[in-house]
Amino acid sequence: MRRYDDPVEVRRGMVGQAGRQVEAPEQFLWRGKLWKVRDVVAHWVETGPWWQSAGVRAVIGSDDDGAEGDLATLGADLLAEREMWRVEAGNGMTGGGVFDLAFSWADGNWQLLGCAD
Image 1 (cartoon, rainbow, N blue to C red):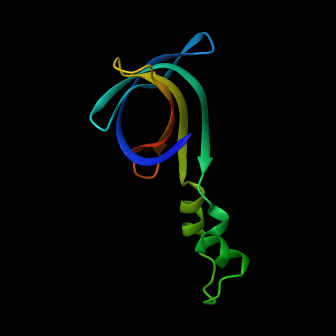
Image 2 (cartoon, one colour; image 1 turned 180 degrees about the horizontal axis):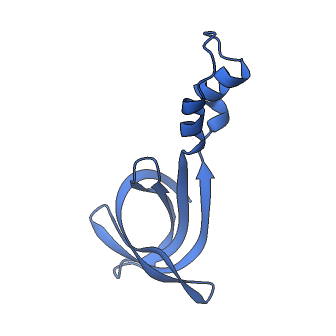
């Protein structure tokens, strides 16, 4: 799978997954081409590397600058999630491929992270 970190525009709708319909990315615009999702291959949620954050280091006392723990910062670190969608899609001009799309709950943006065609 080739890796990317490209912004994409996504339209959600009802898409097939394992023989049933689920709300998922239905279409996405990537590099000026419109891709139609044919199938959802997988769906999961990833958290950010919260264990590396300054808030966690401060709370457990391993922060080098001696700052006291900030529970508000720690809470923000724990909420840094992104929703991942692995989809099979085509654009009508090529056979298509499998794409990894990510939705960031922190900023509300979509990214295309990978493609196998």
